[in-house]
Amino acid sequence: MTTAVGTGKTVKLEITRQDTQGGSTRVEKFEVPYRPGMNVISALMFIQQNPVTSDGQKTSPVTWDMNCLEEVCGACSMVINGRPRQSCSTLIDQLEQPIRLEPMKTFPVIRDLQVDRSRMFNALKKVKAWVPIDGSYDLGEGPRMPERKRQWAYELSKCMTCGVCMEACPNVSEKASFIGPAPLSQVRLFNTHPTGAMNKDERLEAIMGDGGLANCGNSQNCVAACPKGIPLTTSIASLNRATTVQMFRNFFGSDRMVD
Image 1: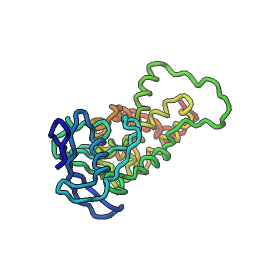
Image 2 (image 1 turned 90 degrees about the horizontal axis):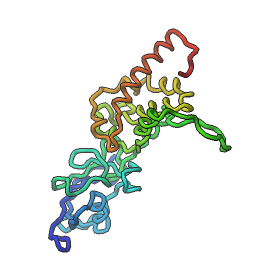
Image 3 (image 1 turned 45 degrees about the vertical axis):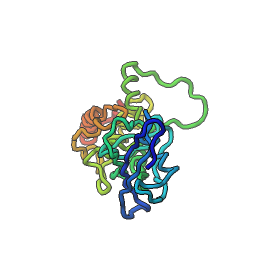
Image 4 (image 1 turned 180 degrees about the vertical axis):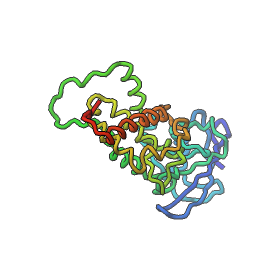
């Protein structure tokens, strides 16, 4: 058993592994040297360099996604001790051992802890989560926003498409069509932007159909799990009001295309 220099302590991990997409799963146990302040990623890096199980069996390096290591990119999401979270910001000292690492089940598993988050990015395409500005020429200063509105819009813009909220949501699954809380919150963000509001009606229409707002069960798991503290349920409540107004406009007809 490998021990950390000066401490004699080790970290025990149980990792759910899967060699191919749709393949069978297994759990492998590891022990890595402990050092103060280490996070889950650092433990995985040690296993990657020393792929040997706790009983001395050689195995293949564990696969997972990571990029920024600063809780910004959202790539390193996984289920840690039964809770979906970012492995870069999850500290070993705050976890009970053995530490159980599993892939998020909402998304197809590519290999081990690596998942395919394409459904999130496709949902963002569906709701046109961007400000439509054509051309590369100088457009000058953008439209001004009241400071109060800009501040809460900034909170919504912190979304890093990590998928944690979708993993925590009981209404999101591989077989369900619900697009999830993160894309819904982005609808609110871009509908509020002075330029993005040009496509407000189109975005609302996109979430009024199958897989949209009506599929939310209001469990509020998403807002509790979000690593950025984004007020997702507040956005969903706001969109409920906005889509209700849009429904009446569609029924009675209106020449007010944009508020």
